[in-house]
Image (cartoon, rainbow, N blue to C red; front, side):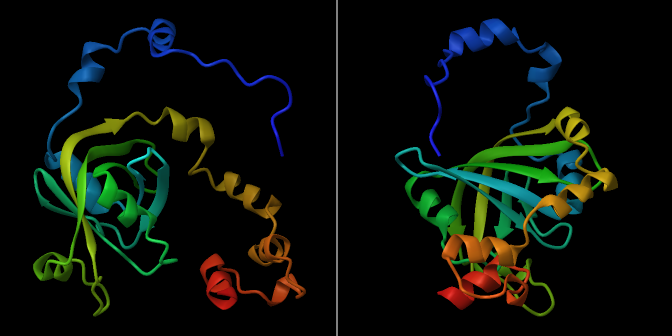
Length: 209
Protein backbone atom coordinates (compact mmCIF):
# COMPACT_ATOMS: atom_id res chain seq x y z
CA UNK A 1 0.00 0.00 0.00
CA UNK A 2 1.42 3.39 -0.97
CA UNK A 3 0.31 6.92 -0.25
CA UNK A 4 -1.74 8.40 -3.11
CA UNK A 5 -0.77 11.90 -4.21
CA UNK A 6 1.80 14.22 -2.68
CA UNK A 7 3.14 13.65 0.79
CA UNK A 8 1.48 15.67 3.58
CA UNK A 9 3.21 18.98 4.33
CA UNK A 10 5.70 19.06 7.20
CA UNK A 11 4.90 21.61 9.89
CA UNK A 12 7.87 23.17 11.68
CA UNK A 13 8.17 23.28 15.49
CA UNK A 14 7.70 27.05 15.34
CA UNK A 15 4.45 26.63 13.39
CA UNK A 16 3.25 23.99 15.83
CA UNK A 17 3.81 26.35 18.75
CA UNK A 18 2.10 29.18 16.89
CA UNK A 19 -0.96 26.99 16.30
CA UNK A 20 -1.14 25.57 19.84
CA UNK A 21 -0.08 28.60 21.84
CA UNK A 22 1.93 28.43 25.06
CA UNK A 23 1.07 26.01 27.90
CA UNK A 24 -0.42 27.50 31.03
CA UNK A 25 1.73 28.01 34.10
CA UNK A 26 -0.27 25.31 35.86
CA UNK A 27 0.33 22.81 33.05
CA UNK A 28 4.08 23.42 33.21
CA UNK A 29 4.17 23.37 37.01
CA UNK A 30 2.64 19.88 37.24
CA UNK A 31 5.84 18.25 35.95
CA UNK A 32 7.91 16.80 38.79
CA UNK A 33 11.43 15.39 38.73
CA UNK A 34 10.62 12.58 41.14
CA UNK A 35 7.91 10.13 42.22
CA UNK A 36 5.79 11.83 44.86
CA UNK A 37 3.20 10.11 47.04
CA UNK A 38 0.41 10.50 44.45
CA UNK A 39 2.48 9.07 41.61
CA UNK A 40 3.58 6.24 43.89
CA UNK A 41 -0.05 5.45 44.73
CA UNK A 42 -0.96 5.43 41.03
CA UNK A 43 1.91 3.09 40.08
CA UNK A 44 1.00 0.75 42.96
CA UNK A 45 -2.49 0.34 41.47
CA UNK A 46 -1.54 0.16 37.79
CA UNK A 47 -1.58 -3.25 36.06
CA UNK A 48 -0.51 -1.92 32.65
CA UNK A 49 1.94 0.47 31.03
CA UNK A 50 3.37 1.23 27.62
CA UNK A 51 7.14 1.61 27.23
CA UNK A 52 8.71 3.74 24.49
CA UNK A 53 12.39 3.38 23.60
CA UNK A 54 14.57 4.24 20.60
CA UNK A 55 17.91 3.03 19.25
CA UNK A 56 20.91 5.21 18.43
CA UNK A 57 19.55 5.91 14.94
CA UNK A 58 16.21 7.10 16.29
CA UNK A 59 14.20 4.01 15.32
CA UNK A 60 11.40 3.92 17.89
CA UNK A 61 9.60 1.03 19.57
CA UNK A 62 6.63 1.09 21.94
CA UNK A 63 5.67 -2.08 23.78
CA UNK A 64 2.95 -3.03 26.30
CA UNK A 65 3.86 -4.30 29.76
CA UNK A 66 1.42 -5.69 32.28
CA UNK A 67 0.86 -7.92 35.28
CA UNK A 68 -0.82 -7.71 38.65
CA UNK A 69 -1.46 -4.14 39.88
CA UNK A 70 1.78 -2.71 41.20
CA UNK A 71 3.99 -4.98 39.08
CA UNK A 72 6.27 -1.98 38.43
CA UNK A 73 8.06 -1.14 41.66
CA UNK A 74 9.05 2.24 43.09
CA UNK A 75 12.53 1.66 44.53
CA UNK A 76 12.85 5.25 45.72
CA UNK A 77 11.51 8.65 44.69
CA UNK A 78 13.78 8.79 41.64
CA UNK A 79 13.95 5.13 40.65
CA UNK A 80 11.49 2.59 39.23
CA UNK A 81 11.95 -1.05 38.25
CA UNK A 82 9.90 -2.95 35.68
CA UNK A 83 10.10 -6.76 35.52
CA UNK A 84 10.71 -8.55 32.25
CA UNK A 85 8.00 -11.18 31.93
CA UNK A 86 8.08 -13.98 29.31
CA UNK A 87 7.30 -12.71 25.79
CA UNK A 88 8.38 -13.03 22.18
CA UNK A 89 12.12 -12.75 23.00
CA UNK A 90 12.71 -10.10 20.34
CA UNK A 91 14.22 -7.94 23.10
CA UNK A 92 13.55 -4.71 21.19
CA UNK A 93 13.47 -2.61 24.36
CA UNK A 94 16.66 -4.18 25.71
CA UNK A 95 18.48 -3.56 22.44
CA UNK A 96 17.33 0.04 22.28
CA UNK A 97 18.26 0.78 25.90
CA UNK A 98 21.77 -0.55 25.25
CA UNK A 99 22.18 2.04 22.49
CA UNK A 100 20.07 4.91 23.82
CA UNK A 101 19.02 5.01 27.46
CA UNK A 102 16.09 7.40 27.01
CA UNK A 103 12.72 5.93 27.98
CA UNK A 104 9.09 7.01 28.24
CA UNK A 105 6.37 5.24 30.23
CA UNK A 106 2.60 5.66 30.29
CA UNK A 107 0.78 4.03 33.24
CA UNK A 108 -2.96 3.24 33.07
CA UNK A 109 -5.51 2.06 35.62
CA UNK A 110 -8.67 0.42 34.21
CA UNK A 111 -11.68 2.69 34.59
CA UNK A 112 -9.63 5.79 35.42
CA UNK A 113 -9.45 8.39 32.69
CA UNK A 114 -6.22 10.05 33.84
CA UNK A 115 -2.85 8.46 33.07
CA UNK A 116 0.65 8.89 34.49
CA UNK A 117 3.61 9.75 32.30
CA UNK A 118 7.17 9.05 33.42
CA UNK A 119 10.27 9.91 31.38
CA UNK A 120 13.89 9.27 32.20
CA UNK A 121 16.95 7.10 31.63
CA UNK A 122 17.00 3.31 31.76
CA UNK A 123 19.30 0.35 32.11
CA UNK A 124 18.89 -3.41 32.55
CA UNK A 125 19.65 -5.16 35.84
CA UNK A 126 19.82 -8.67 37.27
CA UNK A 127 20.23 -7.45 40.86
CA UNK A 128 18.79 -10.25 43.05
CA UNK A 129 17.26 -7.90 45.62
CA UNK A 130 15.39 -6.01 42.91
CA UNK A 131 14.19 -9.17 41.15
CA UNK A 132 13.02 -10.69 44.42
CA UNK A 133 10.64 -7.76 44.93
CA UNK A 134 8.94 -8.72 41.66
CA UNK A 135 8.35 -12.36 42.46
CA UNK A 136 4.83 -13.56 41.65
CA UNK A 137 3.42 -17.05 42.18
CA UNK A 138 6.84 -18.34 43.27
CA UNK A 139 8.50 -17.06 40.08
CA UNK A 140 10.72 -14.07 39.67
CA UNK A 141 11.98 -12.41 36.48
CA UNK A 142 15.44 -13.01 35.07
CA UNK A 143 15.89 -9.31 34.32
CA UNK A 144 14.35 -5.95 35.10
CA UNK A 145 14.51 -2.49 33.56
CA UNK A 146 15.52 0.23 35.99
CA UNK A 147 14.25 3.72 35.20
CA UNK A 148 15.98 6.78 36.64
CA UNK A 149 13.16 9.32 36.73
CA UNK A 150 13.63 12.76 35.17
CA UNK A 151 10.00 13.78 34.64
CA UNK A 152 6.69 12.55 36.04
CA UNK A 153 3.23 14.03 35.69
CA UNK A 154 -0.43 13.18 35.35
CA UNK A 155 -1.93 13.44 31.89
CA UNK A 156 -5.50 14.69 31.52
CA UNK A 157 -8.19 12.20 30.54
CA UNK A 158 -9.46 13.81 27.33
CA UNK A 159 -8.02 11.12 25.05
CA UNK A 160 -9.53 8.29 27.09
CA UNK A 161 -12.87 10.09 27.30
CA UNK A 162 -12.96 10.73 23.54
CA UNK A 163 -11.93 7.16 22.76
CA UNK A 164 -14.47 5.69 25.23
CA UNK A 165 -11.70 3.26 26.13
CA UNK A 166 -13.30 2.05 29.36
CA UNK A 167 -16.88 2.05 28.02
CA UNK A 168 -18.07 -1.61 27.89
CA UNK A 169 -19.93 -0.78 24.68
CA UNK A 170 -16.58 -0.12 23.00
CA UNK A 171 -15.63 -3.77 23.44
CA UNK A 172 -18.03 -4.60 20.63
CA UNK A 173 -15.35 -3.26 18.27
CA UNK A 174 -13.31 -6.39 19.00
CA UNK A 175 -15.98 -8.46 17.26
CA UNK A 176 -15.18 -6.65 14.01
CA UNK A 177 -11.55 -7.82 14.05
CA UNK A 178 -10.47 -11.06 12.35
CA UNK A 179 -9.43 -13.78 14.77
CA UNK A 180 -5.79 -14.43 15.61
CA UNK A 181 -6.07 -17.66 13.59
CA UNK A 182 -7.37 -15.79 10.53
CA UNK A 183 -4.56 -13.23 10.80
CA UNK A 184 -1.89 -15.94 11.13
CA UNK A 185 -3.25 -17.85 8.12
CA UNK A 186 -3.27 -14.67 6.05
CA UNK A 187 0.13 -13.32 7.11
CA UNK A 188 2.04 -16.61 6.92
CA UNK A 189 0.11 -18.28 4.10
CA UNK A 190 -0.78 -21.28 6.22
CA UNK A 191 -2.86 -24.10 4.78
CA UNK A 192 -4.80 -24.81 7.97
CA UNK A 193 -8.21 -24.09 9.43
CA UNK A 194 -7.93 -20.77 11.34
CA UNK A 195 -10.15 -22.23 14.06
CA UNK A 196 -7.41 -24.75 14.90
CA UNK A 197 -4.91 -22.02 15.83
CA UNK A 198 -4.79 -20.99 19.46
CA UNK A 199 -6.19 -17.55 20.22
CA UNK A 200 -2.82 -16.12 21.19
CA UNK A 201 -0.22 -14.57 18.88
CA UNK A 202 2.70 -15.79 20.98
CA UNK A 203 1.45 -19.38 20.75
CA UNK A 204 1.20 -19.00 16.98
CA UNK A 205 4.72 -17.62 16.65
CA UNK A 206 6.21 -20.27 18.93
CA UNK A 207 4.64 -23.04 16.85
CA UNK A 208 5.80 -21.49 13.56
CA UNK A 209 9.33 -20.76 14.68
